[in-house]
Length: 431
Image (tube, rainbow, N blue to C red; front, side, top):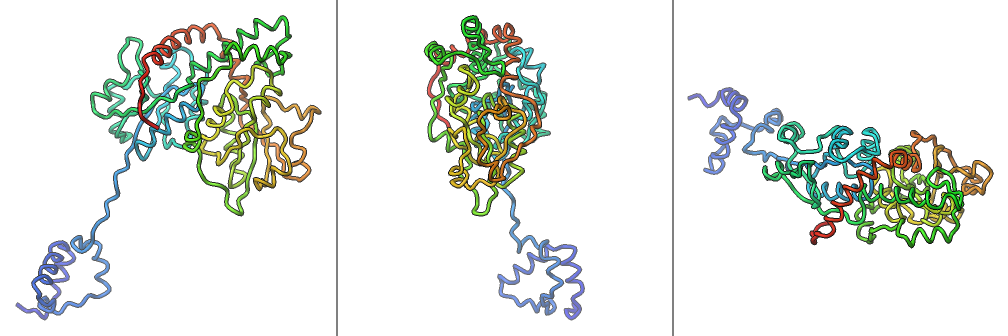
């Protein structure tokens, strides 16, 4: 054999890289000189083939990303929904959320308060959500489960520890459990869409009781004349009662945990952010685009009540704060922000721009009342931001009030299941 002519070797390396790589390694192990193979040197051109010599190159296989799925109606989106999705995301790497269709909600629970478009905006606006599937079915059918596993590459289906039953009494997640692809999270105590609807219906009932005496126009966008004593009476009746027990840990879980950089453009927007809705998400998104860091001031319950009436806020301070913190466009919140934006506050938080939406529950300062934005205006850092949607807390509440009989009937049924859940509740470990 003529070892001087080594063209056959290069042809072999080109066509059979793994075979010749093995021969070279064997030769090295046996202590044989590579000159035996024709005095091969390693020219730069060999680098072209090197990636294919798998025996010399340890391929890096990326860890498979776990995709989890959680669905829901997400009607009257609240911090309980947000916390459920936060927990679901912690069970995987990518969270896909199914938003149940209007038709399915009507068939299984009663009329939804929010439209599909509004619910999609709210779910997509959460910081833990990666993908959204619109018009998802209420029950996990075999066909839909196959779609989730094969088309959306879902590894696990997630739901809370509270039972989700179909009208016939069967478990909506029975098939997922049977397939061994089901995981459970802990339900967030103290709030539900049923509870919120109940709060609003209670306010309506109380308003009807007192309107002849007080001239109340509460929940109609104007401040009512209910005096402080009547407001306290409402509180004593439990109409404003919330079962939510705020903890520092929950706030940390929702927080980004990062402050603005030294040269960051900090944008500030404040408000009640009561009954967090799609209009809030859109205005926060637009505000965030004006800078590098969005700081949101959440007004106290007392401040909101003073400016909107004794029946406001519907959601309490810590409930509202968590809903805002869960929004992907928000970097930080001030829990209990003052009504007036002061010079000291602007300096303390290094605020570059103060914004306010054109659509709000009350823009009384535009009608000659004391202007809470007087200082930022004098500094030339105030901007009226065009609101993308005309939704307000009152307009959402009015949908329930206008159809209070239908929602009252829906709530009676849901309240029974809620009562049963709390009566039979056992401790479930979780986050």
